[in-house]
Length: 326
Image (cartoon, rainbow, N blue to C red; front, side, top):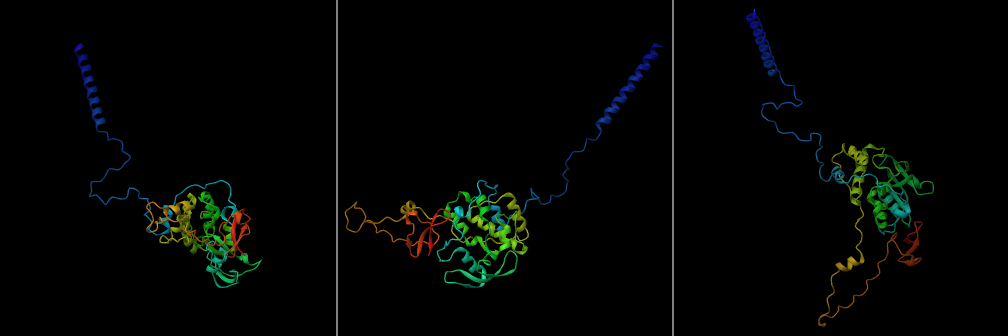
């Protein structure tokens, strides 16, 4: 009996061992859980795709898109609201000194069939309005002049929020009168636009939007202004349908005139006259003739009511003094 019991126990132990071994073999052959990536197929390699398949191709040089990509992107500067006359000068000045204020210069440029008086004022003409595509008959008058207005393509308020606060008064006045940033347009468009950037306002005439945005980008680049994130996105959306749109150019130079010290340092030295003793001082050059001022330029309160070349130093409502014709 004892031998039989021992044999039974040994058989059970052997059976259990065989089951454990089988279970071990079964576990060893259980396939691993699938990974989250896909194995590379063993086929001939294809040309490697871009590491960033969603990246857009670079814009062609000389296009508004390329220039837009070069502009800095920042949020609005904030601070106090600008004052038209105090910060950007009287509307309108005669920055180019041709005897006509900027408004009449732009009317003469943008209207056809114009007539003028002897004071350089545009009396009549026809505007092909770029913002609506409509033809507007212009006639100067108390109730009719406002039907055609001069729009700052990059609004003064937008410029103020994107860099102009740090400019000199002279540069802001140049910007406000830069013909490259000005268009004669209909009253409704100009007044509805106000100081809105491209994210908040675009011309009603869809076919002009590419040229409009391209001019805004060109002016901002010329004057060192930045674009806000939403503004850049809106500009890029417009230009996506006209990727070859060329840039335009602002018409005034924005580099300030050199200071007197810089001008003196860059002036050529005056040689001593022949036969003079070594070390002798060169003769003092004659003082340069006074340069006639241009209409709209700054003058000093010391020149109050002084007349020069048909211009009078006049105190403007902004509290600054300017040469004014008549």
